[in-house]
Amino acid sequence: MTLPAEKKELPFYLRGNFAPVMEEVTAFDLPVEGAIPPGLRGLYVRNGPNPKSGESIHWFVGDGMVHGVRLEDGKAKWFRNRWVRTRVFEEGAELVQPDGTIDHTVGVANTNIIGHAGRIFALVESSFPTELTPELGTVGVCDFNGRLRTAMTAHPKLCPKTGELHFFGYSPFPPYLTYHVLDASGALVRSDVIDIPGPTMMHDFAITDRHVIFMDLPITFSLERAMSGGSFFYEWNDDYGARLGVMPRGGRNADVRWFEVEPCYVFHPLNAFDEGENVVVDVVRYPELWRGGPDSFDAAYLHRWTVDKKAGRVAEQPLDDRPIEFPRIDERRMGRPHRYGYAVSNVANVGERSMHLVKYDLATGKTETHDFGSGRAPAEGVFVAESDKAGEDGGFVLAYVYDEARNSSDLVILDASSFARRPVATIRLPQRVPFGFHGNWIADAN
Image (cartoon, rainbow, N blue to C red; front, side, top):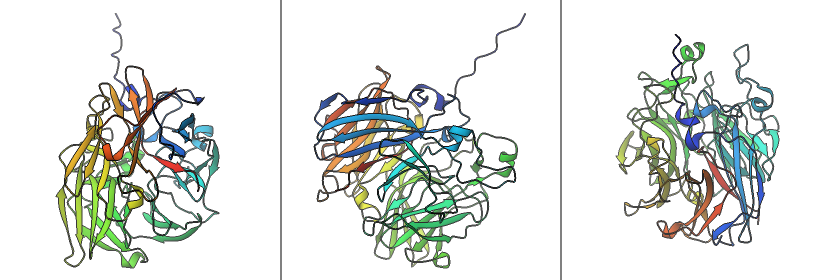
């Protein structure tokens, strides 16, 4: 007698609203409950992993799919979701070549999507960016006229003062870290190797008006894991240490000062700013990560590092005791003192219930939450200013929200200054938007 094989539960990133969608949809004149603010004129678009096979070995490696809604004249003109037509998607190309080198034209382009200098880029930290059209079609890989020779982080930082786009690329092989700058016109004008001791996974970084801050933390590339064919090649490393590198904006590798911090991991800072001669960095901090394997995501909490350059040390302060991720600010405050921040709360439980958005007032220490209702779960909330002259919370927070009862999603617009109140507008979408990673508001040029 043969017993039936035990059915293995799917990993979280293939269940519920993490599961991929298999259709690309185009819809026009979307139904709206409430009123879309007429000043919102542009594209709200978000990226995330959506494996075309329906299967994946890790949440981070599925094919990129972007989901966008075009807003104009108080109307939701269209919705489109499109796979990014990368070489992985089209050809099954491999990032690591037979000789062990990395082909940066290969990547899944699944982590973020940004606009800069009139172009739109889908990003993944292993590879070159992939340019998209305003209708979310794929143009192709971009290396900025051959000047980019490393990967590009999925988290570049736009300086609101200069219009420069700061970013970096990290690698499992030397050089481990390279810092880059695009000018306001989109030309790559700077590339500098930054010395670090090993192959850390540097997902994000921070800038201020005067500094660049690198986070050299103990998730490192494991050659043993890579050679054994594991699902993910990075792991917690007790021997690596943890430190912050602070470099003047006009400085070079020799000008970087390194400051030790308690071992931890950070995927995402909220923001950083200068405070006299000190540098303040607000981050979502994991006390440790992936000790139990690459599918293990522990809780992370809002935390403040204050770098005292004169004393040569870092003060560490927890700011909240609730688990959060995907922190965002008013991007006009990038690198400058900020009062407000936004995040998704309760993501550590990896479920669709009891998730909500939280708004932080860091001047008063108060918080507000927006509860979308039973069975409704938000993705990352993105702040959009009502106008260039509006105050720091004078605008709106946009987020895709999954509705379990309908097994579909909405684009919800909240008034940032009345965060807990009923949404300003709810736009019904024709397609479920799976939980993914990051997106942005790409405003029409004035």
